[in-house]
Image: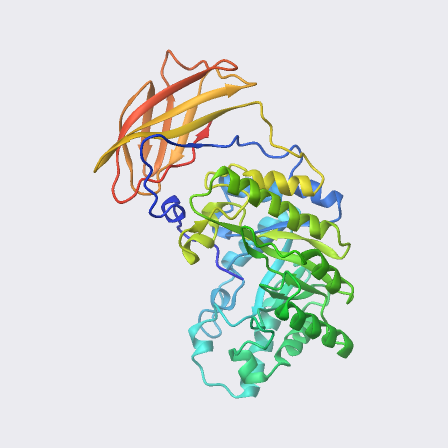
Length: 450
């Protein structure tokens, strides 16, 4: 459905938060589950996927995307404005990069999305078309894009978001120009372009039983009765903390009973920022609830999260003041939600407790500067040396440090132990401090301990 973030920062996640003396934020231990999520999902015959930005598929981002997920969805790279920004001029570089990355890692690819009211190029939306011309544009686009990846993609979101909240058809270029049958025509064209791909209709706010999901149900039922090729429905699941529908599993089951597959296609659960530990625990419980509902229904093929890290999430830019919606934090540390997904898939139930952690605090703050402190403590583990790293998201600059050697490059800060305090025994701790400057806001970063 939505764009993944491009060029987002921690500041946009924690806009307007000024942390004063004594505020603490502990970084969770950066441990993944004993088995990667993809192995746990495969053992249950399910897909666990993530939307990705192709240009970021390197380094830690690429490693996690490859290790943890058995399916990838291009966040933006296959949308019409991306692949055909000018009529007859195609750009496949980003989409190809994702497909090739997935193929190298034995992952499925979910094509997203062919016919949608949003993220279309200006030449298409601003054009004046007869019905015949519009139909030809749509079917030619489907034939070109689906045909390019014939035999390589597992599924396609053929039609995206066709309904209003009350269950009426959304007034779009396609509906207004071609009528409701544009959906059947698009599905038929996609089947002709790749007979082996599974074809889906995808929408949001259809996770529970309501007017919108019932309209989708009736459409799918009608398409099946007419012999139109339709293999599945995608429930996007862009959810808000505390608002997971109680009828989610019931709704998944009723679609499955129509004889189609069901997929959770764009899962994230957003929180009002800054998120505290209780909210992250509730978010974890709700991630588990959603994944468990899919696991419980045989024809629910799997779950895709809409970006696995908060640094690549669309939420903060679209819903100011909300975020922390994905299973990993901005520094790629798994959050409680990650472990909840693993548990729902039959894996480790709790993150390891034997670890050393780093806690960042602002102990004093004034108009243009502040004194910060980081405490490193070990419980069930020990260190012979340490390095604490974090990223400043609001332009803060570190200056004088004590009990550590600190450097900063851009937003990235790295602090290593002094010659006399590298050893941290089990049950022990060390503390270092620093002075720094700030302007506008001083959000607390998440510290990673290496």
